[in-house]
Length: 169
Length: 169
Image 1 (cartoon, rainbow over the protein chains, first blue to last red):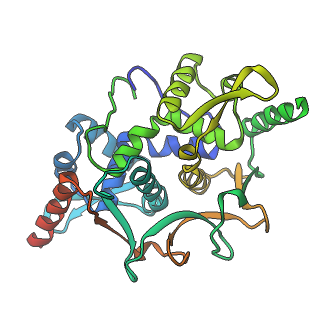
Image 2 (image 1 turned 60 degrees about the horizontal axis):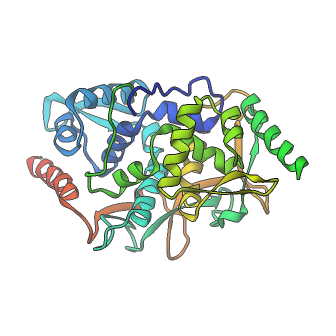
């Protein structure tokens, strides 16, 4: 948004660090288009409602953060393509969750714009919390959060606020 | 980022619509703190590295978009708290995916800042693609995307770009 300097670099929280590493909404939209299969600067420029200046800046940023990397264009040795790194590919759940949430809560009357599906069975795909050991899907009420060993004063401060509230009741 | 007007309202794609409905990085950071249990304006103000002007603006925006709603404060009838609506609660996978990605790719040496865990078994939780019918976890390579019945010229354009590329090879 205009005039807002958005940096979470000093906010010691995994979520804020992810926001900082991934970048702004343009970065997210570009990343989403990598998952659609776009790889070339001119394809992003043709496809996205984005100025060439912003596009070039965000691609540079995504590359600097290690989310994408440049490679020689297999169709034209002098050109280059961009591709997701493992770090970028690992955003697949996050990007999928955005897409499915958008289809559900900002729907089109004629049906989903994008369908995410199981390539083997054709069934629809959901992005959900699972027990990482057993693979079992977990209802929202069964998922908890706690401060881990790297927990910082940021989390301690949130926990303290909540304790104070509880004590007051 | 400074000077960038970010609006995807006219970009007919579920992902872009989700970005538009959720808002910028401040909105995401505030939403994440709702999932930690914060509910009061003054708690957000105390906890987040955010000016009161931006905080008030983003809370208003989240409320207007139906992600949060105001309710009377149970501890003080004259005050108010904010809480997630069903639409906001439905972002749990997305917010969890951000947090876990941040812990994995921007880690702290002493361990995760936040742990997401199964309240019943204590096991770690992952946010993953599952077959929505069977609940089976799906490897990334087994997850596909296709244009659905609400697919628009935005998707058609991306598909056409990819077809053109394929034909060239």
